[in-house]
Length: 477
Image (cartoon, rainbow, N blue to C red; front, side, top):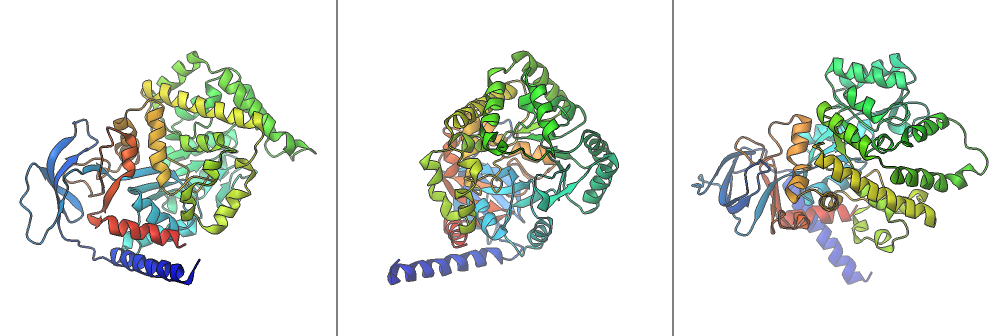
């Protein structure tokens, strides 16, 4: 890079960080905002409202009407040609570096996230900084350490339980530490899992996560697991071969690999994925999906994850321009992570089948009335991005049979309902003013969610200049 280009980039970074600092340290009481002549897509059952004014006072939506007289001192935003939607939620993320992730969330219109695993000390500090106004970022709903069985898949942020007594103690500790929900993981023993379910119900704290291989998706739904991530366990429940495949996995937990076994792993995974795809059983689906509806079991399919694995060997994925928003050490980890570089033809073909299978499950579960949450697993899987990947996820939901409105609701109204947030998810008087202004209609083309003019979070306006500054600050990390 030339000296001139280096100087220009440095100046740009300084200006960007100055804008960001101004936004972060803005006074708690922002002036009133009036959005004029916008189209409001409120995510209620009402159709979009055209040529509407929106008054924002004290961080909340005060009035939504055809014409509103602006209060003295209010900031007026001309919204002609703009479409207003509620702030988006990504319901499956893993944040490891808030300095990088939070600006990217906001710049992409994401005003709330459900963090599904991370370092508890960092998450607790970031939540405190968000609540105090010291840090600018999305609303952060988070679990503490995962609950897993031996051996823990992620030992650096898991609590390991081996029996029902351990499980009850873990739930009680996580509840007393003020985490928002419990997340269960793959290797939780069967008796411990049912103890987690019972103790979570007793302590009135939701439990979500993977379906451990020790139980079935039907059992998880029956005992109150509130959401299932990535269709974990669901794929087994939709195939007559699934229960035996699940038992085979269960039998292998904790056993050291035999010589040469790891070299055979891609082909074993391919064999399982192909069996599940080839033996999908409509009668099992017609049992499971209504079962999930009756029990209120939500699905967060994270189709973006399935697509990453189906894209192994694709240069476009490996050279995505969004990698400039990924820390250098993480990019290096991605480049050497075998899980996204196993370029064995049979394995790649099986991953493509699995992606198609996930799209089918999404389509048929949605048609059966199962409720969905949009999530990405950004921070958990390589080649997923905070949080431009959420826009990819919405497009994948539409490609799987959702209408654009249904996809948007999976990232707005549905998360608010799932989380019990009465002041979020829709555009109505009294709700918190978390909004995204778009320059094109997302109901005409779901990709228009990427055409962001500005973002409003708790009544604070982040115009295009400030959003660009957020992106610049993330690029500089």
